Length: 165
Image (tube, rainbow, N blue to C red; front, side, top):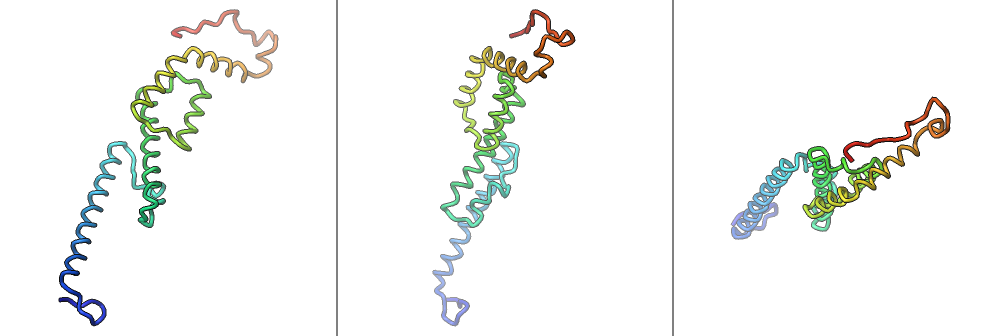
């Protein structure tokens, strides 16, 4: 038997249970931290940020889902950005589409699963002619008023040839 803070003895079996629970908790904590570190390395960003960890700051089981969702958002945000940079997925989008998607990445990024990424790319490829036309119309609509008038100094050629489209 051992002594607790009071004068009553604590059974050795209880002491062993507490130490065993502590050891198991420490093992799970270390495993979790190592796994988070590995996940951070895989996606190329730190998942130990306050933005991700804050919802579960008090370690309450009910807030763990929010922390996991924040982590998912960061991982998916980074994955989409890498897809744009390395694969050039966004080259088939016009300015408005890029802005809208960047806004969705900022607020609530879509899951970057293979199915969703393939679907996004297939949709962009299938609609690239319409996307180009919409982008071109947007550019023309944003021109200064003097470009839209019949002023001689701002005339365009009769034909506009877009190569590679």
